[in-house]
Length: 29
Image (cartoon, rainbow, N blue to C red; front, top):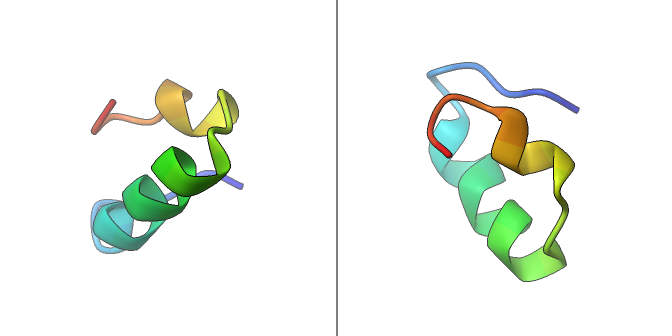
């Protein structure tokens, strides 16, 4: 699931917790 600029914070936290590589493909990473 890709995230927008409005929900980047919540997904960023989940990305670190889950360690999903897919989240790293977003802008804030």
